[in-house]
Length: 230
Image (cartoon, rainbow, N blue to C red; front, top):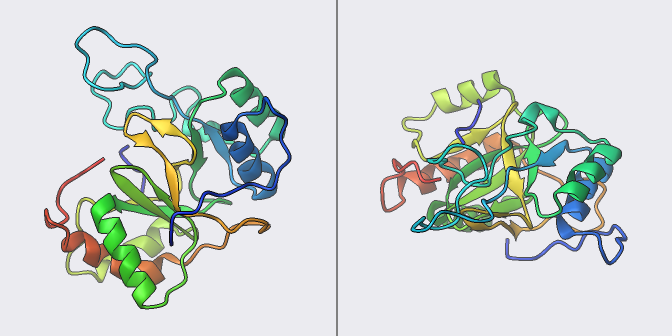
């Protein structure tokens, strides 16, 4: 469905980059050309705001944007590509633009949940000794990258659950996730679990192996998992 919208280790990408090449371009090129994950630039934060404006806003026209800076705008998510020339052109013109991963297809999907619930879920998955792939963290939400799944697979999986908290989101075909080292209106995006350096393509688990822990952690969160925290 479309979205509305470890341990801490920074990934040191193996690509050689010149002194002027920004980190965002390095990450975008690694995803696109080495891993085959389609990417595109996010809209980014507003560079300046009106007097009295609270906090960093979004560069999109929506004054009440709920994911400031952390979504595609122009181009839209369907423009995501693995073409090196296009990626270089985008980030040459906007070197600090967030790196947006278009989920599904040749790229991983993701399951995201509020940060407090995410920390609990990862602790439980570690206790069960279940292998995890990359986990993306923002100050408000964590996203667990998983193998691509279809709407039918996801529907069957969730139908068997007694309760699925509204704060749990599924980023499948047509969705997106912002990758480190992007900076958005919610703050810095980082790796809670970084891809292992030197791998041809990061390994990710199947969604059914992690969803129980993610659902349980969301339900047991202080707000009962009902808060739609962005």
